[in-house]
Every structure is written in structure tokens, then in C-alpha cells.
Length: 99
Image (cartoon, rainbow, N blue to C red; front, top):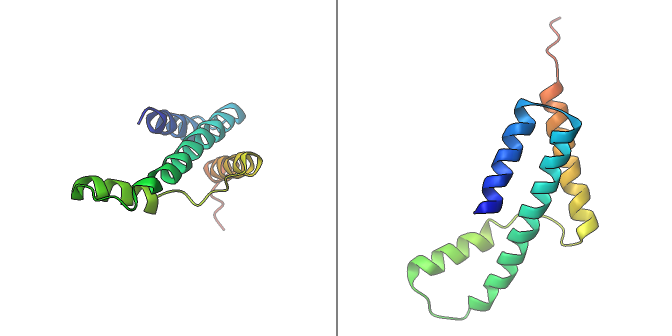
């Protein structure tokens, strides 16, 4: 939850103050959040064959289903989050050009 909150703050800052620094911060925080989410999703599979309360089973299923499609390799994950942050920055810096 804490990482998710930090990720939201980083995104808000990067989207309202578009700089190289905010882009880099967003990429770093996204990398941390994604890495931890992938770890938790992988760890959750140890409960797949247990009988759990329906609410808990649903939470675990949602964690597994909503895990990001991201590489486990740290270098590739860093590259992916940097590219995503750069693309968001480019979109935010775009200018409207009337005909």
C-alpha cells in the first residue's frame, strides 16, 4: 500500500511538473512497485491448493490476475519503466498545432 501511494504521488508530480527529474523518479518508483507486485503475485501461488475463505481467495485471485505484464529481469524491468515514463512525458509535452 505504501509503495502504491508513493507511485501515485510520483505520477501526479511527473504529470503536473514535467521534467527529466520527475520522469526519472516516476520510472524508479514504478520499477519498485512493479517488482514488489510481481514478487507478491508469485508468492501467492503457494495458496492455490488451499481451502480459503471466499474473501481471501478473491483477494489472492485479484492479485494474480492484475499482476502487471512486466519482465522479471531487473535490467528489462528498469528499461520498461524508463520507457513508459519517457512516453508519458512526451505525451504531456505535446503541443496542439491547428491547421
